[in-house]
Image (tube, rainbow, N blue to C red; front, side, top):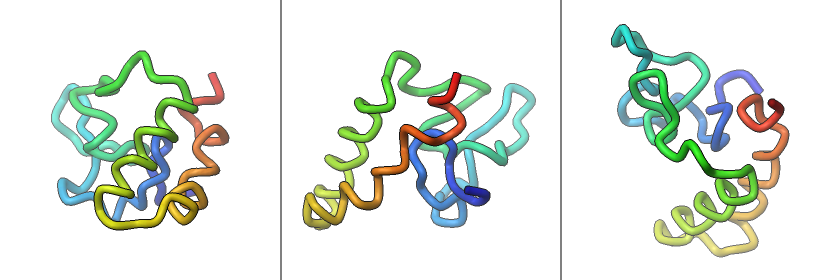
Length: 84
């Protein structure tokens, strides 16, 4: 799953900010800027299911049909963030 945000599964190359940020200002190689900033998750209390629902909603706002949005997000529970 290299190259995907390990929180939401967005391809990191599609992240407009180039990735999330660590406390020292460096770019995260694991998490996108929509999920991770200053070494912290933006939605720290989300479960994998809540993240999946959130991502489906965001993809639908961009015009993607719900079944296709679900396909894009179905792997979220298997990502590194959710394995702890």
